[in-house]
Each structure stands twice: as C-alpha cells, then as structure tokens.
Figure 1: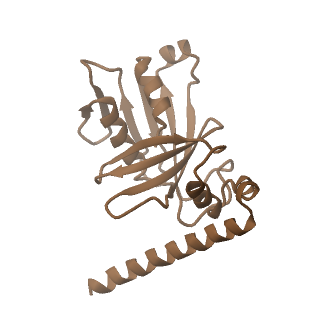
Figure 2: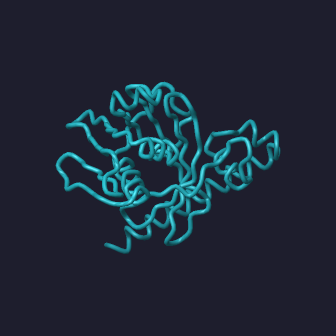
Figure 3: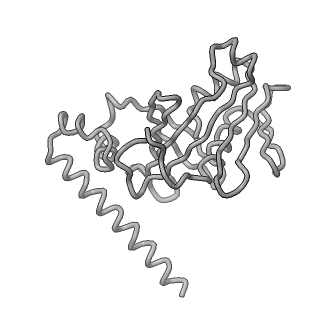
Length: 215
C-alpha cells in the first residue's frame, strides 16, 4: 500500500507519478497516475483498462493492486524478524522529474511494506496493520479491506503510543517487543504470543474444515 499522506502530497502538488513493482519472473507491474484532470484521477495499468475516479477511490484500488504481488523475500533493510503470517510488498515511486525536483522529491522513492493481520478482524471485516518504509523512514498504518478490490487506510498509528491490543499483536509477531515489555511486562508478552498461536491454530482448523467440506 501507499501511505495516504504521501499519495495526497503528490496529488495535491499536481505531480504525476509512476509506480513500478518489479517482477523477476515476468514483466514489471507499472501503474501510472497523471495529474488531476476535471476533478478526477486516472489510474492506468499496462494491459488493463484505465480507472477514473476520486482520489480516495483510486488510492483504495491502487493499494489492493499493489498487495496482489507480494515479494518472496524482504530486502536487507526489512523488518525483523520475519513472521509466517506477514506479507511483504515492495515497489518504487517515480515522480515526474521537473515538478518533483521543484518540490524537493528524489527521482525514485523505494517503498517496502509488511502487512500483518490485526486482532480486530471480525467476520465480514478484514483489518490489517501495515508497517511501511519509504526511503528509510518508517510509519505504521491501520488498514481495512473493503470488498475484493479495495484496501483503504483507517488511520495512522504511532509506534510510541499504541493501543495495548495492537501493541500486543505486534509484539507477539516480533515488533516493538522491548517497548511492550517495558510497559506491560514479560507475562503480558507471553499472553500475547499465546493468543496469537491460538488464533493461528483456529484459522488453520477453519481452513482444514472448509477443505474437507468441499470433498
């Protein structure tokens, strides 16, 4: 996904940009967004019909498209440790050269996202947390999948002032453990890890039951 703050900064500065998602086995995925025209954005993708709509609609669709092609291995600077239930997405943003330079933007911005299921997910509502690195700067976001084709940002989170439930979920996955233990103690961390294991086991059992039901 692309952080909404970065996306709107580009759109509101009337900077066209291109996103390249490298694919080592076939041609790269390329998404282009020209400057706003007639009050709407246009998202073009190689080999597909362009999408035209409001900024929030285009962003939600673009987020979902970017998440369709996770990378197999994180880059060297990626978040550690890797988690079995996290999905890693990487891409590069290329702002139009002259206008981007006027606004102090680099020619290329490298982005890496780690997408993790959130404990707040409920039937019919899929919530995820996304850690994002844009050219070395880190941010944390709460996202919601809407339908099959849209991923929208609910809010940005502060790693320094997280709700305990979210902090515990991240700590159980290996993130912000030190700050969680400082605030809540080792016992709370073990409880969070147990909760995560139980959730994974339930998900695995549900998947197995669904497979058996089809036979």
